[in-house]
Length: 609
Image 1 (cartoon, one colour):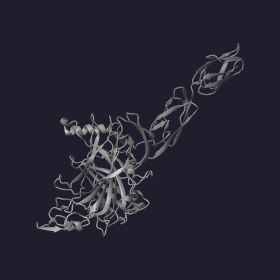
Image 2: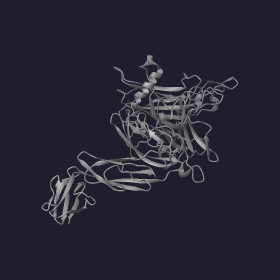
Image 3: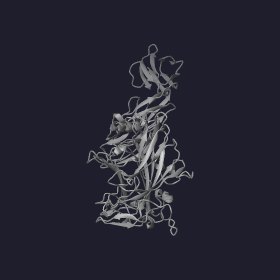
Image 4: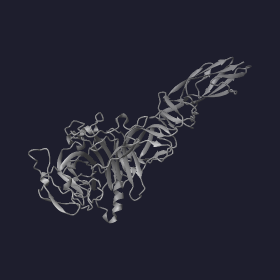
């Protein structure tokens, strides 16, 4: 089943069977630039996503000064789960924050929207960072906070949340004579003001692509920069763009129908549903003076932008109305001149968003570390695609106690061993689309001593060796805990023959080396038509014959046999002579018949007295 279809069915059931054809929100990918306008150095950034689970989080973005984020889930309110995606400063050996440049300077005053690409350049630190989270479902709220040093190496939220909102996409599947459509709505950022019914105001400018394509939308491509040099920012997905809405005031309100509480864009046609939609939202502070806010509710009264700029300062944008009523905290009315106010303030960031109704199969980029004996935060590793998945680990191994569910693609469990676990994940979905990714997962805690098990395939034939994390073929070495019981089996391919083990194993049966130290074994495969030579010698008076025929020594003492053949030799003494013993491959056989298996060139001899 398609992953998006699962989500669609879930939401339709939640709506009710009477609305089976209703529109539904499926999920989206969001990347954003944000400026550190806190006035102090910050040591991290946290995104709170309400109404979803950790398994709803897909890709995360790490082109910033903090790297991959840590994800945790809060289920203290079972009716409203919360997920926290935290980008956090690393510490040096003394516990000091900011090691390896993992901090964000105060934003440089020169950063403007066209220069947003500097947010992804970790070689500079101009106070702008780029974060990103993809998710399934419809969050009830998304909140953003800078993290500052609270003393003693502890981190805390800066007093004012960041006013960057995430769009919600409402998708309607294709119907007869009606293409699939998606409508993007941008809610007001959740920035509460104590004692007020309105939150902090901000402005949004909306830029949308004018056409859509089936080109895949990847989270890492939703950036301001023009990485491929086509003259279009990467978030445009190769399509032209236009300004859909120049300026709209966003302000969380007690009344959700308030025109300031959100902005809904026009419907975007998506053909049969395979096309992808991308948009950019630029956010700016509300720049008007504090006396333009209602003293009782906090509502911003200079809520429009004049298209005519001040001729003395053409870069600033002013309000509309020279006699706008405002109420103070005591209920008294006074009037302000919004046309004299610069209502659009500093640029504070941009949100780049993409929507795909049916996400292609993919694997996330990074896994957060775990802790021995502590349940691992359930994490969606396989994104999109059609279930069920065929999952293999061709190199390395998952930490003991962790597993990936083939239906959900979620990594879950409780680690039972500590240490570093590099591994390669290969996933194939029900449509036979494959993806492969290499990870290194660190589990904090006492690590069991590990030793290497290495398999080397030899010979001109082909085959596989499998077992205990080995799949050779693809992976011919693995780290295992010392003392682990391992068993390897060799399987020849069609037209090949397994002739046996070498190194720390022997014979042709299962190979079970004792892993008290590093071990190395060889497995030899040859073509099934391969022939080997069998030579015999006679000492004294007598003859040696073979079954199948080929050897009759005295006369014919050498013959060739196909690999794997069992050749029975019979020693016959001459008259008045006796058979004494076998030599070579038949040494130790007491009877006058000996069977030799042709797994290589062989030699044997019979001694007569």
